[in-house]
Length: 171
Image (cartoon, rainbow, N blue to C red; front, top):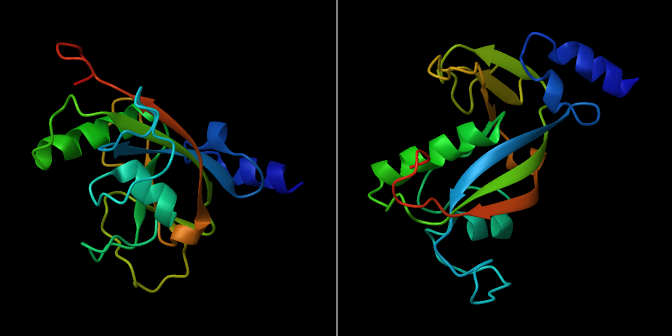
C-alpha cells in the first residue's frame, strides 16, 4: 500500500520509474576519483584526500564538506545527467576531463517534496519540505534533479567507476 501510494504521488514529477519502497527513490550522484580506489593497484580502502569525491561521500555519507557551507545534495534521475554534472564540475575546477569518475547509485528518502522551476529555494527557508525537485530546463530528456536537504536521507548503495577516454563524445 505504501509503495502504490508513493508511485501514485510521483506521477507527473517524472519519477515513476525511480520509486523503490514508499518514499524511496533510486538516484545518481557523480563524483571525481583522485585515489587508487578500484584501480589495478588494488586499493580497497577509502582515502583521506579532500578532492576525492567518492571517498568523501562514502566516508561522510554526504555530510557537509569542510570547505563549503553547502548542506544540500543534488542527485540526478539518470546516470547520464550525473555524468554531465561531474564533467561540468571538472571543467569549472580545472580538473582534467580524463580524470577517473564515479557514479554513486543512492537510495533516497525524499520526504515532503516541493517543485521549483530553478534552484531558487535555499536551506533554512520555511515551508515544511525535505527535498526540492528542480528542472533547469536544459535537459533534453526532461530529467530532473532532486535537492535533498538532509544528508541522513541519502544512502549510497553502489559505486560505478569509469574512465573517459580522450576523443570520445563523453568528455
